[in-house]
Image 1 (tube, rainbow, N blue to C red):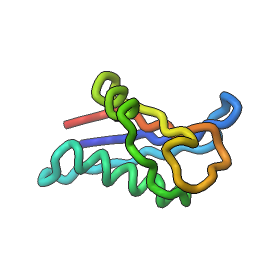
Image 2: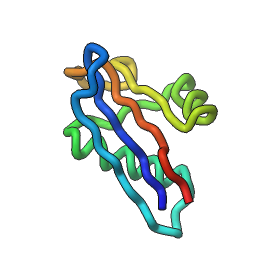
Image 3: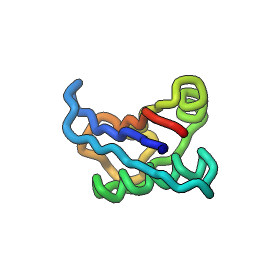
Length: 89
């Protein structure tokens, strides 16, 4: 089972979160992360964030990263979107 926790933060408060589960066996870890992020963005009604080098490096080291205003083309009503892999098969 693969689980990704997506959280929206504003002024140091958690304003919304969701856990996305994926139990398919035919996908790579990268595909599962992108699919979960797409689903979280759909649920939060957000455009997909742009992965910058900082995000890629943080995600490789810690299995989590934050997407701030710099990662979105549209304006956002929160400080950042954080994703965190909480379970992997």
